[in-house]
Image 1: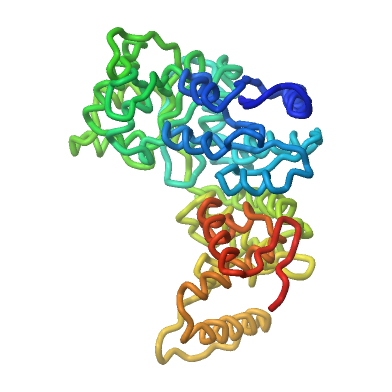
Image 2: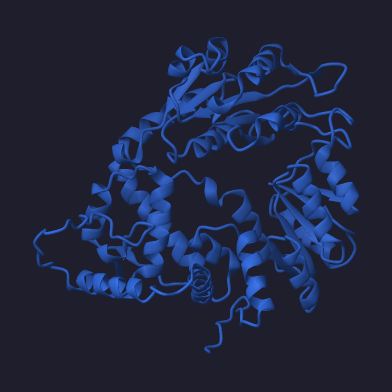
Length: 464
């Protein structure tokens, strides 16, 4: 866990730094916003930034965005400094950490960033076979290609291999080749010199240099442009890279792991992927089976997510009813683990009683998993589950009640009701709504400016 502290180290933020170090974080310090941006440009890297609320956090967030550095910022300040805390969140800080520092709270923040989304949960024999091969090759220097459908956990597997390797104490750097525009990906990977192109205001160290000594994950490698594939091939072969606008090569020592949800051999046949690059990447291939091919993992992951989201939302933990497990095992899970996680998260919030029943297992559009769509003229078959019938009637009534209302009004009520349900927790509400925390904050600012009551963290909205 790499933590960048921005601000003076005297006083309470210095104490927070020592607590983070005691919790295993590798801490780098920058005294100002400009120094912090220069540190990150220089390749030091950070998984999380703690910034003194007294500094201009908006300038830091804008600087990170301009440099395409996707590192969350947590504002730190004295607990009674409410106005600065609000301003920091509005400026783009992910959270506000009150000082004096609470060791358990800092540990929770570090854990949420470091490991929460990277836990490898498995029980099925099909997955055990893949893990056996991963354990066997983790200690080598071989490049690895991890393939599988979207949502099967390819990045989680890559991190698992890194932790098992001789490079475990060195950086693990991930680049999503599909998410970065083609004209920016070269600079993102290899870095650039000052003045190399419009907007290159300073030297920027790329992901290859940032990962030096460790592991570089090239996620969705199949989306990389053919011209850039040639430069990547040379970097892997020669173990050196050329910064954009640079005058001399830079040596790097990294291990490459690549992922793809497409058939790269087929891409080679169609001329969209270089055959020589495929051979370089695919020294060892790990194919992750789809979730429907590992039924025991459906059960294990469902239980894991049920406990995780019960704790995250402050609701009682409920076990899965036997009929719910059967329903989950029969679903195709085309979105794999990612779809299952979202489904269980919804179920945790919708469940009532002592168990998570089948009626709580619903798709994003509200329909129940396993339900057969009605067709005109089809006979009505009495259901054995009265609760499901009642839920369907309520859903139909709720839908009819929306007729005549504007989309913006419905959206506003949905956002505010969800935030109310989450007791003002913006992060949880954004996850449930399926929108970014920034979008949610912009909407809430709009509602607040119009005079509506918006609940703060730990509060519920006043009626009326």
